[in-house]
Amino acid sequence: MRIVADIDVVVSGLLWTGGPRLLLDAARADVIELVTSPALLEELVDVLERPKFAALATVVEPTAIEPVVVADPDDDHVVACALAANADLIVSGDDHLLSVGEYRGIRIVAATQALIEIAGRSRTT
Image (cartoon, rainbow, N blue to C red; front, side, top):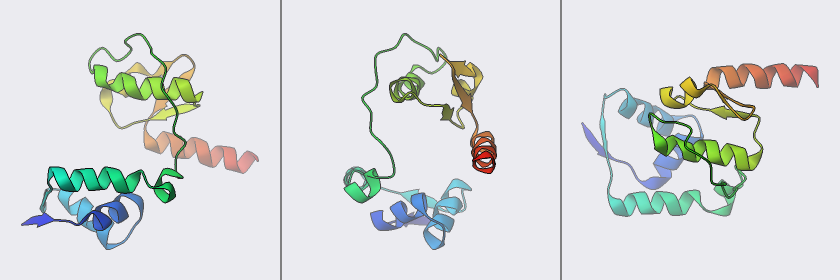
């Protein structure tokens, strides 16, 4: 089944639970084929840049870095962002990033490990 989802459904599925999330999960599981267009992708970017969504994250200007992720240089943007943000962790599901392990004291971990660490910190504070 091919489905075109309006952007409000996509955003809801990305950020919250419920029907929209289940729809995106079905697309990830290849139960349905999610179809979009350049115009819809532009709308998605526009919506996610709105203050109520942008408030979920702090935007930093990444600093230039030497190549780090040799296997996938596009991943260097994630590392550069973390360095500029003085981040504690980089959280990724990307094997290329995860294989780096650490960059300048910033550990690169999977989401599950990050959640374990966050839970551990909340118990000690």
